[in-house]
Length: 224
Image 1 (tube, helix red, strand yellow):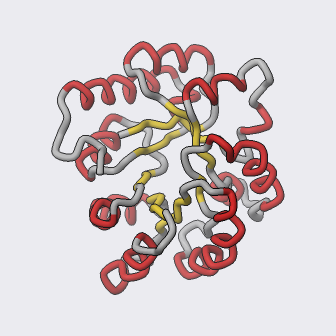
Image 2 (cartoon, one colour):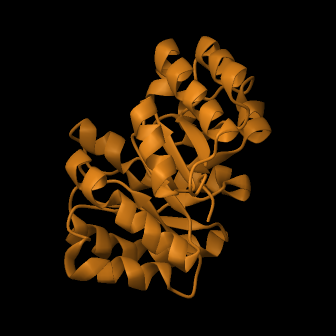
């Protein structure tokens, strides 16, 4: 299981992350990319990174999704990105499906794995749409988003569907040892959180938990 810190961490947080667990990567978004100075760009290549769509950050600030900023991010950083998150609609599965149809053809030419965001409502009909998507001919995985209640109730089932289809499964907003343990129990490939980039204590707690998991792997150990 691979941990991603949302944005480049503060210097003290990065030192703590590295101290306890080797293998951290970064999740770059349209909001965080402008703050990456030339002097720190090498960290993205040294550690590795993936690309978020920035939808949640825009939604959280009450503004519409800025697709131009997202496309600029993709154009600049797609070459070595682990994967790219397809634009979605927070908490709205119907709109997320509509956006998927629009964006899939725009993002596939970049040649990177793509993740669709699972939102509240995708559990209907035994996750039939999710099952169809991960069995699609292209390499499309799932980013488990949605409300906290949705994530905790259905995350394990979505992760199992991804494992069966041998597709990537990532969980967003993971900022505690408890959530890390849940992700490991689900057998997901990766998770991300912003707390590890901003707060020393969160960085310490989560990185130590990753060390425990590495030393005492559970049922899936985060691998397919």
